[in-house]
Length: 257
Ligand SMILES: CC(=O)[C@@H](O)[C@H](O)COP(=O)(O)O
Image (cartoon, rainbow, N blue to C red):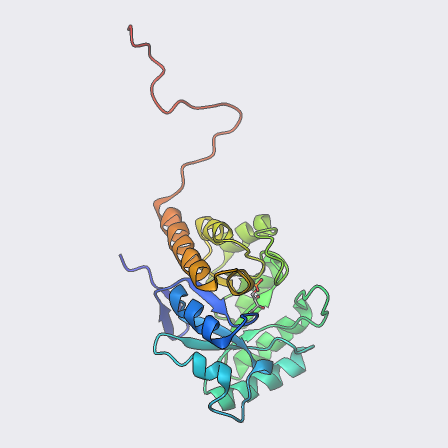
């Protein structure tokens, strides 16, 4: 069965996207990310030394399977985001950008107005834009209309590990989206990732839950398997929930009949 995910000009076999922050060492990061089999890995531009091609973090991500997804984390508005994306295109030779504008350091919630503004500008400049946003179905449609290649609604605040707190809105987004929906942020356990995939998400992005686990490599494998299981379950179609009464799994006829 061909179940690849297409975004812009790239095709992905893995529906688990990952991040590079919070690992206790670069070696551990590399081991976990390779074990995850993730093919799209985001790295904060502010962590990359764009003058240095041998930058430590980039050298650990140099692998034929890995596509780098620079992100604009740290910018405060659309203008800064566009500038950061242009810098990244020059330095890293990719026009893919994960657009993250979250000016408030306490909750790291994405600014919807600046994100839409930046997305529109970046699409016009030829970027493949992957916007990190709140699970807002109306905003997702507006982003799709300006030409983003996917939407990345949050499950819960970044790094909170709380899971799919936005589930009702994620379901609406999944139902009405014409571009891939990637649930990003707050996914704290493989079961959360599996659930997102069961709901019909096209992919998930996970960073903290893998990086801060006691065994990031084992946890990466657990996430990989969970994403695969959730995807297969979604395609197989889940049995419907039956309300208000039980329904016997076997016929309720007596053995004596
Ligand atoms: C790395 C990255 O892009 C994060 O901003 C992303 O949203 C992941 O969130 P978690 O760390 O909660 O998985």
